[in-house]
Amino acid sequence: VFVGRDPVERLRSHYRHEVQLGSFDMPLSEALDRHPPLRDVSRYDMQLAQWLDRYPRGQLLVLRYEDYAADAQALVDRIWRFLGLEPVPLQARGAANVSAGKRVPKGALRRVITSDLYARGVKRFLPDSLRQGVKSLVVPKGRETFDMALDPAREAALRAELDAATARFRAMAEEDAALPAAP
Image (cartoon, rainbow, N blue to C red; front, side):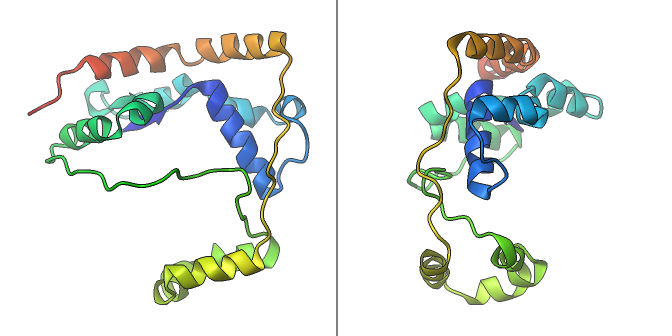
């Protein structure tokens, strides 16, 4: 199952994530010049080609995030059916993965939290409320604002470049959206 989204919006989201991690401390326009992988991850056709080299097209379901945002249950039902499973109702949730003000541990604390020992051992014994409470005390809030301004001509050129690099993705997503949902 391959889910993509508007490539420029994905790029902006990736940029915000890198700023919160402390990887970038520069405006988006500069980050695009200095960090080509930021742009490359939005080249969905390149990613799909790697999957299609190993698997037949019929084993790959290509979806758009925008369809998930519009009707999450319908899209998740399609995934379940693609996998040959009975659909299961989604549990209601709020927004996830919000970048502004996100608390991101850094340094030694990040190494501890991302360690296998913590993930496989310690974490399961700590209630989520305790972990979140400690995080709110120990980890400072991240940035609330991001310099994502792009000159209109540059954004148009970026969109044109990424549209060309996502043409196959869009066509495949349209094909798969047109497939009848299995009963």
